[in-house]
Image (cartoon, rainbow, N blue to C red; front, top):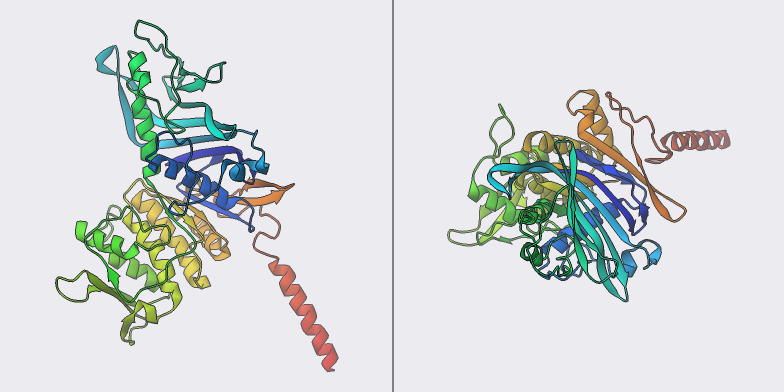
Length: 453
């Protein structure tokens, strides 16, 4: 699970400050206030991890990636290329990382539950380089750090090993070459040092973290009359939800039942999704069936009410196709995943937006999945506040933030929720001026009545 994130000089952020993440984290704010940039930072690192180019410091994106941020000039705050990009990420490992003592293989040297990664990236003469990167963790009241940093020559690198003695092989002390991407140790580290073979495990944990991140964007594909599935099992539903049906079919194929917590009734993924669609008041039920035996073509048929016939998803309201990828993603990803959602409430009526909060609570509590959602929905946050008051959602399992612009930079405020769901530092005009609108309407009505007399 992601625990903390801080970045300096990324897009509209001069400094995000240290953001604490919870199992359910919400990013709210006005348009162009920087909240989407926080998700984009994570997605940029994810596509860097997935890049096959080991020499590419950052994959800022193209038409095939999660985000396309242009050049370093485009993404650096204020377009000041001389400014470095600083990123710091802390996370809890899905299971403790045990590292054997290089001097005595019969015992563990480190047992790591949490890791922190820091990197400073800069551009010089049109080329990105790493000023330094390091992994840090605490063990027996000591903080250990391992990484690489540029030497004073600003060409070669040296190893960082705080509170640990890295032993070099005998021979000439050759300098280290460039890091792998922005987070990895080159092979020469193991070639030059006797007792640092475990460093690759730290890199693997970083890559595993971003491998567990699934993303769904705000613009989702239109529904289709026919869906094709040849047995593939996608890792998620795609950034536009284009693989939602394939994911649902793959889930049915790999095992019929979801694990939803002790004592809970077993559901298939289709049953769970159908339950929420009904609760939201969107449809009564649906079925996903093969058109004919031995065909790879499927139809998604929807029953709008109890008495209405089933019709294709293309023949009902647009909201079904827009919320379906959200629900599929929540129940398809493996336990321990991290879901990034942009405006999941798009094309949903207020009641459905309200029930979406309960979907997130169910997934966070019963599937051990972290959800980070960027939203404009007042109905979503109001339901979350209610569930906190009703003790259905512990307040310490949430973190809500409000983003705003100030002097051409993004500013973020953590919303202070108490144990009964009250927000004690509610921002001005957070969701508009409801009282002002009612007062203005009343005054206008009185004027019209006066004129009528």
